[in-house]
Amino acid sequence: MPTPKLAILAALALIAAAPPSAVPEVGEPGTAAERAALMTATKTWFDAQDHGKPTHAYKLIGPSMTAYLTPQLFADAQARFASEAGKLDRRVLTRISWYRDPPDAPAPGLYVATDFTARYANLDLMCGYLMWHEAAPGRFELVREEQNYIDHAAAKAMPPERRKELPKLFGCVGAEEARVD
Image (tube, rainbow, N blue to C red; front, side):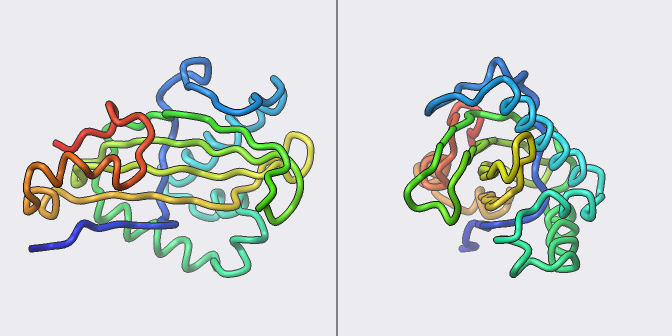
């Protein structure tokens, strides 16, 4: 039986379909300026990846990721994911989580996780999050990306009860958006 394809720190991400005001927020919300800068960075990130412009997306990555993720490795991972996933059907931001000066962070400041789910032609389930750090006022850098997904063949080979558990196992926020077909 094939195993589910689980991609951590994978490439191609998604543009948010839900308006920012419809996305639930947890933690102490950022200011209007921080929220606008976050949404701009997130949209820029996803737009660049969705349109096959890895150099544009790579410019948003912070030093903690560029220390191990070269531009070529990043571009190659994006191309592989795009080939495997197929055409994007929809994407939704499911939650925004705000963290000020978290104790385990590598640097002080504002960190924001943007959780999402997505549907692609060749995938039954995809979800993940982007972790942003406000490196300077109004300028967010990506410090972590996590994406989990399973393709149709792997999902269909699983017992139905196991398939139903996947959104929870993958840590999907907004399980109603992350149903496995």
